[in-house]
Length: 314
Image 1 (cartoon, rainbow, N blue to C red):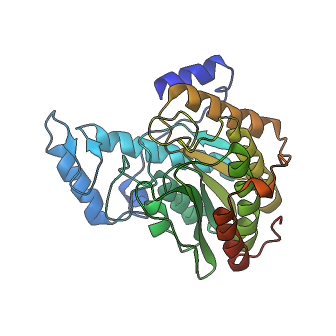
Image 2: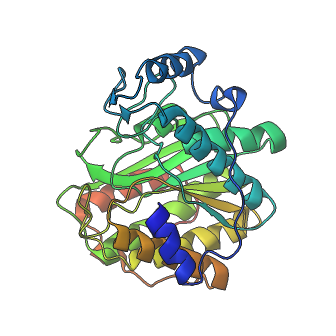
């Protein structure tokens, strides 16, 4: 993160910054069970200079991990607070969060930053929040925490880790919409075309007051952990789609929270394109053709269009 931040600053893309703070126990416990937070406190405190895996899953922790995770979650809250004032914001934080559910950390994730930030926003402003997740991996923790005005929409490689995210469904007035993509990869045009059709349909159905993006860039070709074969230039098109829908539905209130992405150069380029697109406010559709989308994926989209009708493009 230090290297990514330094390169973004050198490129003139890290001008206005918002200070992060630590998330409180009260804020964390809007997403996580108190017993889970106590487990993390207890296991981290017992390390005494060593490192090990958290007992609930594949999360490496050392004595500083809870402090870092608190600051990451607080950074996500700060980004959402800025976005609530109509200023798009990006939380450049680690560790990621979208695999952590109410009672379990896993998949590099200790606390669910996006959900903690969404619930903090709702505690002050109420309303609906839509979490948009384009990470290579499915955000199983975020899906499990949806409901109560929190909706979730995701594309992800399937059946890649964690092997979830096959179904879409309604939660009262809220939505969970999953579009599993072949783990063998898709074209850049197909990836963009999916989002240009998926997001309007779901967002118009749930009418969010704020869009919160779980921005995982491990879908990019060359990422050492993910890699859907998608070109790095897709980030600009995704940001344009998100900005366009946020402008239409929620006064431009959008915040990004970093999830995956494990190649420094690809992260810098992707985040830089999101920043430029958001700053420019040019949110034109890319023109990506529906015909570029694999037939099976188109079938998944059509089922979502029926479930969440929102005048999608054909």
